[in-house]
Length: 461
Ligand code: FAD
Image 1: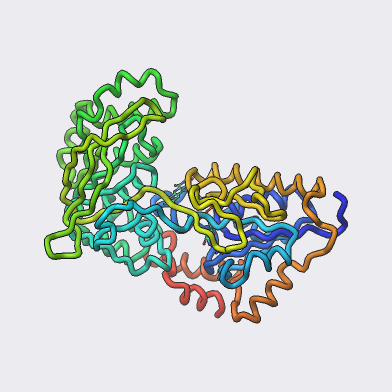
Image 2: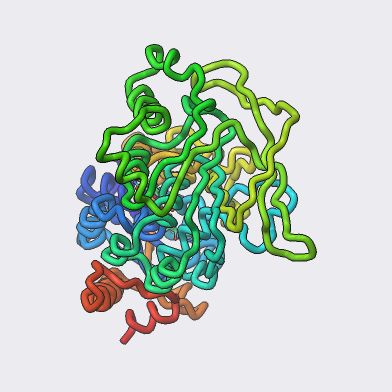
């Protein structure tokens, strides 16, 4: 490297992408300093607010992130809304490089009439509600109906289905919020339909999530046998992970189960099932009401085969009565600062290998870089790639490091002037301790604080 000053890097967002980018930079160079800015007072993004409460093992990555945050060359500044409290241009003046990893906080809408009726929720809000995202605290979804329809068949859709149908005795040992637990204890939902526009071979979930549905206590599967016509014949040509997933689906849908499983199924009080080849056309209201009564689905047929098969309308429709609709058709990144290039069609920051196009010194990683798909391991790999691009640019001199940069010193002064007080990582550890203590008294791993005010109060006293 040509420069003599220590490189200062700023990261926007403290989800997996932010932490994995920071981790790789700190490990690769002994002189780099990394500051992570986060909008909320609490770190970890979707690991805290997305990952289902009954998947505690997935949250173990928090241990690694905590090690990174406590590294002497890493600092965490929570409660800082980048784009509002401080601009990207200001960050670029204070740091040699700025990495955008603020995720995908919007959601794709269905674009059908009736979408705004009471009883229709986005998966993003529904998940945010059961995971204690402050902005979703007041969602209080109406669970007084018997049938819920989930649109979309990815892992998030299956998370929502599982949470709706799980026995309370299982959920109450997780970090699901107390208000959600109380609402679910009163829930009348007995039947969950998981709707997708294409067929069984195109389903977007993974086998782990499907297996969890198949094994969910007190539930039985309820599928439509005809949806699986021709699927057995197609098995032999499928790649291995897809083949195993499809085999499990076929077994669940078509095979006559053994005696024990038959007995289990006959005693089950709740059902779940996939509904394939269906697209939402309209959410139907009760006459004279603003509440939903059902959903109208278009019946599709497939053109082509395998992954590339297209759903094509047949012209037929079907009405399904239901009292709850959760649309799980995808998250979406949003622009946070007009100075940053944004591809609104793909809803990502346009980049090559994490280098934001036409913006020297600006990088991106995670869901903002790739679009909102992929598990934490995928996000880790693409974040390591971005870190490698930054390191390359530091070594090649593409990244201008000739002048020393003030880093957090100047940003902290700006924030103070604007009346914004950041939450440090040790402040977060106070919140963490209070949450774990509150959980302990209820036999839960954690009882999350549900408002920003309460988080700040605990952090600063
Ligand atoms: P995020 O995790 O969303 O992090 C972005 C961070 O940026 C957030 O902390 C946010 O508050 C912050 N931010 C946003 N705007 C600003 C701003 N203006 N200024 C400062 N900070 C800002 N993967 C698995 O491997 N296993 C699972 O079981 C699993 N379950 C999932 C369940 C759901 C419902 C969802 C949606 C995803 C799940 N994933 C799971 C995928 C995983 O969560 C993602 O791969 C990963 O979180 C993406 O990381 P990210 O850092 O890009 O985004």
